[in-house]
Length: 510
Image 1 (cartoon, rainbow, N blue to C red):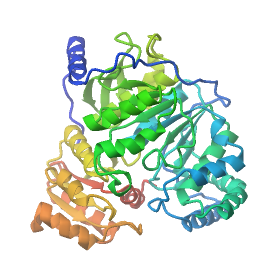
Image 2: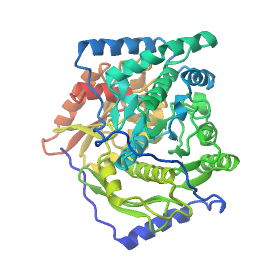
Image 3: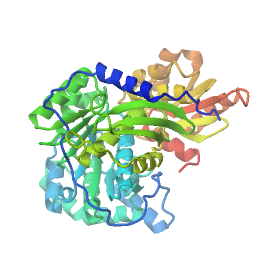
């Protein structure tokens, strides 16, 4: 296995200089926008540490497995996640008949283009470290649909998933009968998540949007903290063709008087977000201004960070180990920390910091399956769910930084509604060869069609076509094994969350 490369440590003065440079590069903020107290907290109602967040396996009990399959089939009969009628009318009607379960707990709402799920997992881990009971709703799933709804860091039990569906099913059917369109797959799952969190009950919910923000089904909550991860071009047919247009849709999660935690953004996207914050009388904490990554260095199994929080220069968190690779994950960590600080009311006049030991423990526990995840050695096989050009560039940079591969083989299976050319162009500099394939989803791009684009990007000699994913994995591993045993060749499987999830199962990590 090719091990992550070490780097020299930065001393404190270098860290201060680095952070100062970040601040200097940022646009001067409106002096009236200061971080205010936000959110509330209660004590965990159940004792014990959270369980590791790993994709769940198929239920061992045959009856439970069959019941879960039946629920999935019923959900699959509804509009899929890519077919939308952009409004919150149906989900609002469902919340109404369910008794507004989403208002039973405070929430942290997350939008953006890339990094949402990893950031959500980090926020969840931090809240758990401070004895708060959490619910987390993310999408899509890597292997099991139950991953989308988590309690205290673990996917909801299959039995509870089925029970939750059966509990709300009569109300779903009631709303279906009253609306021009039935509730969609994603809307029903959102209703299930909000009901499950109220039933638990949770102290705080961490909610990731499905798409956009304004009309996303999750946007029936009034979150005290709105988080915006980096915005780039994706879902352009629904959200817009520029970062500014996409930001306009995503800014819809910013509610009156909330705190907005803003990752580094394209200038036009940041301008839209700031305008929306002013209109909503919300306050803004911006990466590179109120908080940020002071320093980072590669470590075995991840990276070691110094993060600056919302409490001013005194709130610096040193020696924070994050077991994830890539600069983008360090920035996700800074955003997650700022979101939790804002939830606890830190910022502005509140210049205190959170307990450093709890912060270190929380970040050290973070796992993000399918995000630069090593699943095999000899040769090393890495999985990453990058599915748009910006995500692919971050993955390529993180992989090049953390691993010393002498030769890297790519396995790419993408969805047909994505910018596959931009995705492939981002990976072209680091792939010696690419094996194009397709996953089992109806949305999967045909392998031959993907190969035609790949040949234009890589040239005919560097492209191999294997329509079956298992054959593609075998072909890539064989190509990597052509190198000497100690040469350090590797394989990256990427292009889609579904491709990565199926590869994970095939490689025995399910």
